[in-house]
Length: 134
Image (cartoon, rainbow, N blue to C red; front, side, top):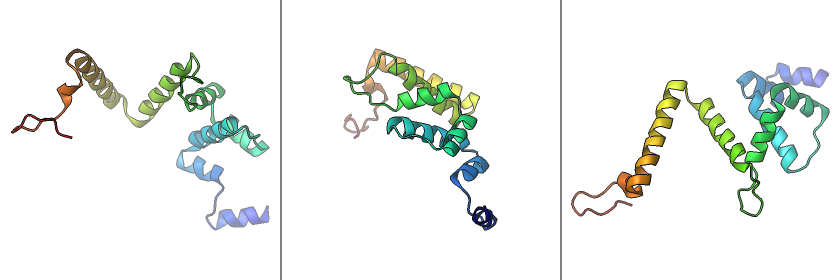
């Protein structure tokens, strides 16, 4: 106890306090949970308490499943749900609603145009030679 108090007084923090103070407690809890699930490592009581306090069990399970291999021999039928959830969560956390709406609408527009006209439509071309730029 005395050593821990001295370390905290000097500015040395545990990963838990540092993550909580900087706003990354959920991400650290998800990383701890995923590591324990993927490598089949049992968590200590402190780690287990931190994970349960900062994550939703379903969210942690889904994001852990999204990290599994996409190889055709090991992929599960519900893999696309987990991957889509992770993709959406990442976009929602990074962008405000207005930017996210614009971003997703532009992605949808490009996807539709590329499906109809081909991928070459958005490729830059050299004006003099009409060759596709690398």
